[in-house]
Image (cartoon, rainbow, N blue to C red; front, side, top):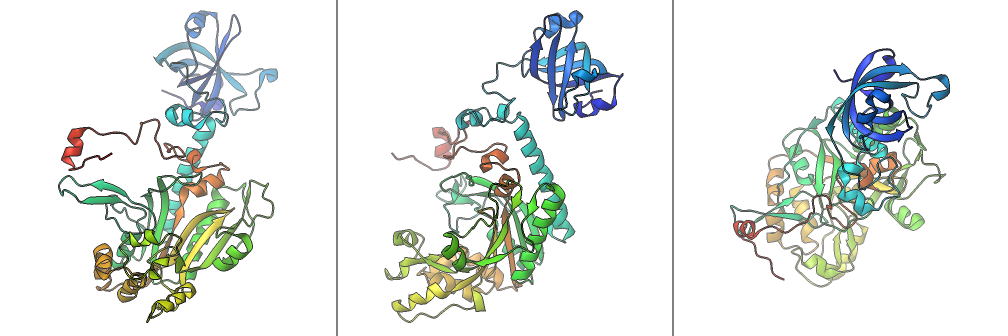
Length: 477
């Protein structure tokens, strides 16, 4: 029966069977040493002359099984840098599961010296390095904690669809053509925003999920075409209720799973969007007192966001189905069109000059920043159908477009909807900060490059003519 490497220290004098990858090989003439690696650690294996010929063939990253005796190392040979440094395995038998070509990239370093393209192309090799193994295991552990915490707060986990409807939510959708309905498309969700609100209509009251989200936007160090959100929604709540759940989750997570980290201030400080922009020039200020301390966590709430904002490119809003005068096209939603405006009302417009009133409309929206990154955001939602429709029509959206895109929401709200609000945590960004990584690609198993390509799978890629014909599509150049 196989023994994990981490358990060998308790088996001195026993014969064991271990399996894994050849991490390092050293030939000392009459002796050959290898370091064998499995998911739990690394151990030194010694081959004497009777196994020398077999051991001489072993090379890094070969997958092998070794039977041998666990021996205590002499005091002067103890390696304090590994958990198995007080023991070694005297090999008795060795068998090879599979040989390996010379690895295209080193896996015994942290990988920072290797170019991104090579690491992404050979990601299945890159993930063998200790840093990446640690990142993925801590990511899994963190997700387990969040699941436990949310269910302990009476949240119900619900999975929402991946194939949905294209609606204007701030970024470009990824579209999926329908084979059965020529000329029509599904969209991959930018977020579960509408579904989570419909679950409040359905009476769940408290929902959460680990949600996959897709946005066709320019990538950067803290952004990927597909990413993970911790999504949540609550009924019969105000802003303070939602903030309390998020703040409690963050404090408990850091305390339990990352005790080496220090939260600079709790309860988390708050700052208005206006003050953040005036003082720091952005809406995700870095509040750390010592920015050179990687274990310092400075959470800050940013509140009171503008509901509407002026846009530099009026043609962008017109493309979304807006009509009306050129003056109206200078405005768009500041963030989430489903947010509730303060006072549960919007100004009435009698002429184009009244559109200056839009700059004074504040949304019940809130973001949580951490060390200069936005890691969560949400709002109290607009649950009033007429007010939701007005939010769009004030920007010149034609009523037909509003009904076409959001008629299902208006209809659902007509059957009794509780006041509700929620938020979404950018899980990849959060892990990036907690693990002191420079970008989110280091905490995602199979990530895309900075320009959105999957070099390992060679995606995006061409598809054959038969598939294009089935989907009623044609490429024009």
